[in-house]
Length: 160
Image (cartoon, rainbow, N blue to C red; front, side, top):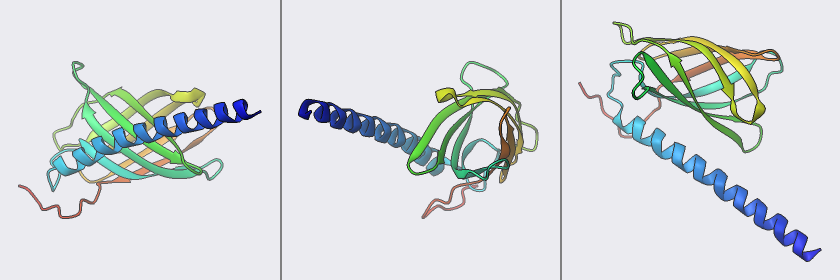
């Protein structure tokens, strides 16, 4: 019995370490992107923070996203998300979608993505401007909204 408890405790510690490493890795990238963001932003690229909400069951949670051109894939963008729901459950995933930066700095988001962990295939539709990120998501069993804004950086100043 003691051996079994030890293995269980070791597995829980290992899982906690893996989760904290992933969160730390994403947080470092998000912090760097936030610090590098020119204010006021020139385009829709860069960091975003806000929330998602299911219109089916009312589930909701925090949402972060870093928007960047996809390396070596012209006219594609990576939307690197970190989403939370429930107590301490987070998922990190990147959605690569065809998109073009419009002349006004906006990006139209439209595409499908397979979420990790068997969470299903989602359709995403939205528009990002320099200051707003409004999108909807839809799957066979759920649909809802994502509303994000630019992160507040303490001590940040406008750079022209």
